[in-house]
Length: 354
Ligand code: PPY
Image (tube, rainbow, N blue to C red; front, side, top):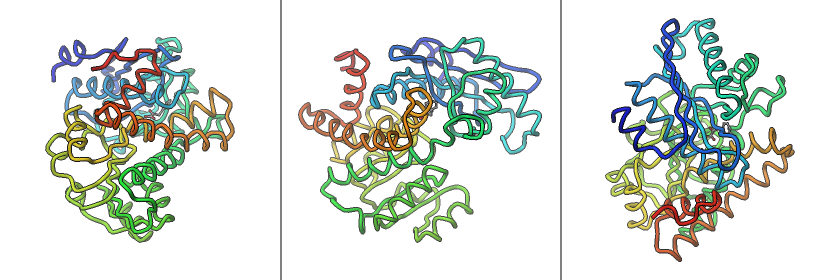
């Protein structure tokens, strides 16, 4: 997709980009909406095939953050930042990476508080400490630096309660013996595995990192190669890695009863959601199921919640999902569509999406 197509097809408010010759980094900040409050969302760092791909990712992720904040009833808007690296992150020298973060902080300061960042794929609490040290607004700093630390455990708890609620929707009242296929064993995916294991689920897992696969195997999980996970027969498929894994073809063939994970933008388009619905597969829309991280960061750092209050709100994701399921049944619409309608209503734009 060309940059023109991305920008003209986007319904957000601002995209800022910067290329820095010295570091070779390309920065994108996408502010989708500030209707509910300042835009917030993480900074994703990776290599992209093209700068148009980086802008596409940032804009789509920022839109998902608006829905995520609204669905979780948090007083924030949606935004996301992307840093397209000139080389894999692990190959960058420490001072090179630090300079990239300094430039990122400079960009965020230029935006004057209309966008608050946080950790995302490729960035950590330690990186947020650095960004904040350069004077830019960032959630998710380490606890030692005064932040709320990693949001991964809260995200995983949210996915877990979403799995329980979605399983109940397909008639599974107990996760014991339930086959759960987990794609991605990062901080969230691994915790999803641990929580489901405690409930007695049968776990089938994959990751591109063999060390993480071994760790999951030690927890009793069955490991399959990354390209096999979409062919696995399961009760619940839990995508906890990259987005865009379910297109119409996958939706037509995947052998599962529910899709519930933490990866943002799991569906490539609404047609994929329609196909899942046509097949009677339950979808816990990602911007609802993965809301635990945002609830943790905003709850702790903006709303002053305790860890217990955060957990209670994260558990409320199950209630939001049940509302989505009811709306879907009543309206004869897909779960994806029903969740977007619910988020739109919370944004005060009821009926804007047909
Ligand atoms: C996400 O939940 O997808 C994030 O990007 C995490 C986040 C949430 C709220 C503020 C900053 C980062």
